[in-house]
Image (cartoon, rainbow, N blue to C red; front, side, top):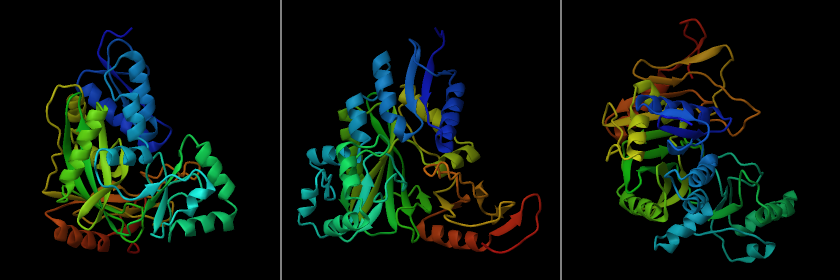
Length: 380
């Protein structure tokens, strides 16, 4: 039995999850806490290093009497469908959605464009061929399933969901290259916003290419009210990000995450940020505030999605850039683990126009070079 206060970390085999575990471990060390594999009487928090471990962390903490999100709250918040329905039940307007469970559900008169998303997890990876696909409407989705011979498999999954994806949610699709994110931290009795972003897909729907950190949307107050409802529901000692689309000036949540994204995690480490230590102090009631101290009014982050460079080469970034990842690293055995797969860099900026100017200059100033040399080669 440990004689020192400790935390327990739950992670998966992904590099992104392992990186989060390292960050939380460093934070624990800074606060004089040990890290254990299983809880004991001195455990102060059970933290999930992957969205897929969030419900497990809640149940484990509950079993050992460790303050944490209640299992019921964790199940609702980690399911897109249940989270949408919960917020709708609290009076918030949500984008239209449904969870088909029989072929008869496709008879609904719904002609608007739709996107089909797994109930659990985040990102653009899906186990099934219909996952994260956009269709002209519900009828078009039904025709796709019929033509491709996937109807039976889809309905089988809806009745007996795969543990990694859950059921699939059909939601109205808002075509946009601009998303918004609001980030919150939960202690035992309050929730605070610690950052806001604009997210750009740059012509790659669903795949985040850039983040403009520190940029708040005028409608983020409504998202803060939603975050308060999750506190009342029972979320505790966790991070929660709302990813939203804008329609007619209003923000609508489309995804929920319980950890920092890979690129920002790497940026915090490169900058020597104390965010994880500050977050752990906030979770444990040792601090009443949580925020991100960027070195400039705004921070830009960009991923070079889909770039092809030789195995023995790397990206040489422009002088004003903060290198985060300089090469392509993708394991086809783990198609879900792409957080650190693409070259990524960050840069300081003052506002959104400055962000776009600096990004354009940074992209123009990149070169592909062979590892171990400074020889300039082709432009990216």
